[in-house]
Length: 468
Ligand SMILES: [Zn+2]
Ligand SMILES: [Zn+2]
Ligand SMILES: [Zn+2]
Image (cartoon, rainbow, N blue to C red):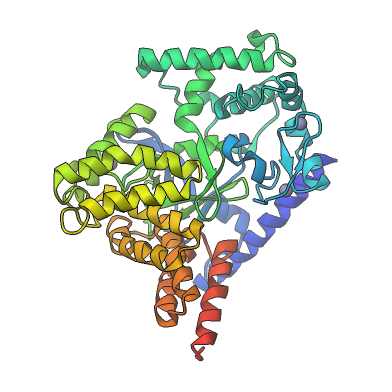
């Protein structure tokens, strides 16, 4: 019953997509067999020097939806649990709570029913730990447990269409002693968590013991975020783990609920490798390389890293000053995560005010980070004019670092455009929202709810200006 309902839901989403593709294909005068079309857009191949990779089989256009993937396993992140439905990933202030484990949240009984097959076994595990949840169970423990439930009850999975769980890299031989200790601790937590449901790990396939699974999850999981790039969960999408990293990628991963959408962000030739960015690229090349090495165990040799391009802008200004900014960021991020807006604004202001001015330009990545956090604090405190001042200063550097269509730039433009609109700066708002819309059509797609919302705002703005 549950799986039928689920399948029906996916089909209807597929059908909508198929209609869009048929229309696109007809416009181009191509064939209209959509199933084949979807199948022959990408293929797995051996990427020189990188192992497996994914490449285009046909030319792709900027904004084109290249691949859709369902997760092999997924969870709602701990920090988003109280406001995110476990089934559809809708974000709401009030949700129903599973009466058994008191941990999972749902929009309504229908969402709970649909999620039951995935939640049933973990519900017992979560319940067995009451009242200590959620302290003892972190996101990777919960995700690996879900992977184990699937492995112990194997069914063919569309998520493994191009690349399977067994094939995922674990990089176990590259893992440092410290990290290995961390993995062992996670295994202890996992055994404690699973004790109600799984006692015998020997039934797991070879090479998929818990340590190995944690290692695979660490370097292959995707953060599931909403259209505004707020983290909602974590998922494993094995086929999409074929995608290699580039600091200037040609594709982007976005989500509709838990469904992963791979989109081209620029025109791509047939047989060209498809790449995404595993990390936020708004970092100097040395920092990017270190992050990639630590989490994904490879040395980035992309063109941007090789030429250290934009490093000079990212680290512009008086080094003594920006090092102070850089040192303070961790503390500011903590205030942000704890929603301590007054303290956060005070902290950012003190740094930017004391040392800002000409010493460090806004293009410096640490200044930029502080400006972003100051804007966020002002929005939460209802200080619209100041939020707009900070936000406006970020736009030029965002354009510099996210030069290709990038979802973070679209979202930033949208936030600033909204503030301009609210404060009655209609001409400016129309321009900013228009820019956001052009990028979002590529990164999120025309059919994404946020793109609709943006279009509606733009229309409103245009109506107020008395033109159409
Ligand atoms: Zn729901
Ligand atoms: Zn439950
Ligand atoms: Zn790179």
